[in-house]
Length: 417
Image 1 (cartoon, helix red, strand yellow):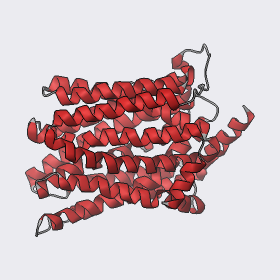
Image 2 (image 1 turned 120 degrees about the vertical axis):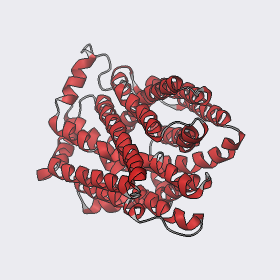
Image 3 (image 1 turned 180 degrees about the horizontal axis):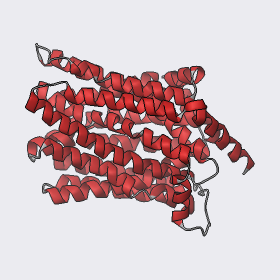
């Protein structure tokens, strides 16, 4: 905790504002997200596979409309961030007012478009203003996200009893506040292609033509499906074994406390021992191993006993995510070098969105099949295999330490531009 506070205080003002944004945005999202799957399945009565599709579609839309980073490279990152937060407020309200599937699809797409604006723009802004300390800056972003993970569900469980519509309205209010704070407190930051007359597609062509980056981004798609199980698969599993919402909140509280207690120390520990590629390979393996406790037959006993394997899964999955995220974000920035860093983050969002949709459909299908075959561990075995395949592919992408070479090349480009 002390290392986290020191790290935050040592950052510049723009980075501090961005980190607060990370915390607030996550809190606003997590006021709603843990209860969205439960709301769609139990109150509206949608099939599990359709809920998985809707939740994945939200992330896919974030990637499909991956314009935030490219726009930020051209017009600056601040206006894109402000616009994105404003749109997220509207998307949250739509989720609360919608019950028909077409409207829910619209809410998912609209919310994804909002995140397509501010997520890559925020990451590009942070990487640019803290270019010499990217790994630490993104580790702190991970901590702030964990704080949001702690605050959001706790507020959400208080408000959800007043109605899901009230919960969505409160989440929208958080994004309205963030919009105003960023407009007032965030300094202007010019994009790397400010004033350029190059067509936007030229920047995308440049990013998509970067073979090392493209291979890396495709390989990391699976990690987003794994992380998303905190909002999809695990809450559904909690509801089945406990029948209540308190266990869902416990998942996010546990994840938040682990991040607060260990993110910075774990990042520094990994940085001292391994290259970025090696850290991420190990992190993916840890994320896959997280699902092993759920492969055992259901435990007998009270709700707490039955919840223990799910909580253990959430804890191990959180540790794996803590290992992967800072190095993944820093690697993308390093591979971009002096090119359109925002566009690189946008392309990564697009590919991760595709991965989330496919992963959610795969896990939802495995859940349905496991019930039909009475094989409870099938979904978690699928996720374990997905993680191991991703780790193997990343090892191949990082052969001869190519990601570290790209990191050095990006740093060199940044000093000579």
